[in-house]
Length: 120
Image 1: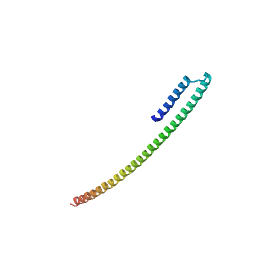
Image 2: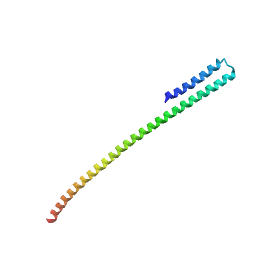
Image 3: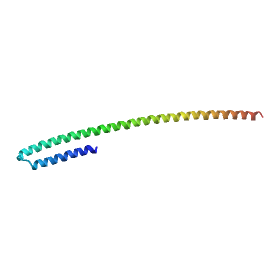
Image 4: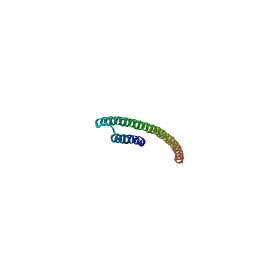
């Protein structure tokens, strides 16, 4: 972007220097010189407007591309986060089933021991 800014600045400086040299060495009379200067100034303004428009378009396109990249990366990360979350929930569910099975076995053992104490 600084390259484009330098280009616009160089164009502006070149136009100003050219206009000054033209005035200093102009063999024509004042009215013709003023008309020529007005025409050159108009041409320079048109070039600057065109350069500014091109620069604006380039910056806009770059910003759009960057936004798309960021959105794409965020979507990928979201997918990854969703997958990780689902994996964690699934693992927790399996572990809960394991804990419940283990507790049921211990409860069955305790019931059997309790029956032995009740018979004695």
